[in-house]
Length: 291
Ligand SMILES: CC(C)(COP(=O)(O)OP(=O)(O)OC[C@H]1O[C@@H](n2cnc3c(N)ncnc32)[C@H](O)[C@@H]1OP(=O)(O)O)[C@@H](O)C(=O)NCCC(=O)NCCS
Image (cartoon, rainbow, N blue to C red; front, side, top):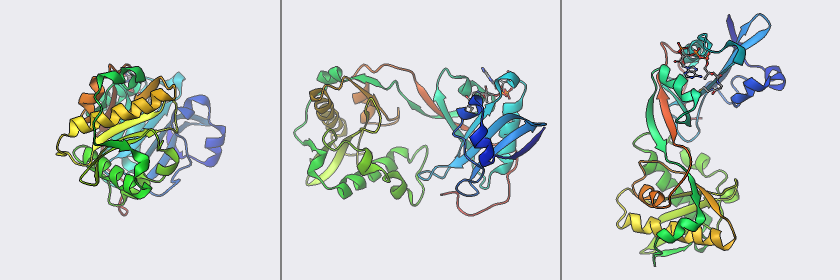
């Protein structure tokens, strides 16, 4: 068995099983973006990828797929070991999946531990009557895009600090598509003393719309009730348009969003983000992993 970089030809000719990973040619961005295949003669047996997020630089995302005819023979584990040697920075891997998926069984067998959990995410908009309105809540359209993006940056940084800290220049990458993807009318903000202190952001680039919410700081006074009011207003806006379902996106560690979320009788599967330890050494060191 040998390993070689993924070429554009591999991408163009990839069989269906290889498309389980977001296939790109090797080093599509820089030394922190690798794509490798394991071959047996002319046959591709497995594919493995690693890359850093432009928002977080603390772990490599990784994806592996093995030819279905060759599974449970150690190719997946061997690919992880090979990817470990290709790392340009000495940081572990990260992967994700629904709690009952085989990908997480595979990760756990490699020593993974859970770093974050996303609760069941499907929320019926009609459940919004469980939440109270709040007088500090307004439509997001009342403030400028710059203010909204700055608030989004604040919220994102502190809600990820304890388990996946942001990199130094994360804000540009985070807000790259903000104006295209945010549903300004349905999004809500709480304003106290002239400042945005909480939000409920609705993204209309997917269906059902994705909903996030939190305060500008971990210790924002009255945070839970402010988030509750923001979510109530956003769901009212969606209901007025006849939207019946929303997909919530957040974490069990979000102190103000989670209590509100749980009151909406969400349905669906639990989702885990896991850290997978690298196996052994790494490649030659290069500059910062932040791409
Ligand atoms: C997940 C995947 C990459 C595993 O590849 P593989 O070559 O079969 O994995 P290995 O043979 O190295 O398995 C190593 C261990 O992982 C666990 N494992 C692998 N597949 C599993 C499955 N379907 N169910 C439960 N455990 C599994 C086992 O503990 C296994 O050890 P064992 O066979 O001695 O019990 C492969 O099933 C696949 O390509 N799935 C589709 C793509 C995918 O989900 N990729 C995500 C990976 S991040």
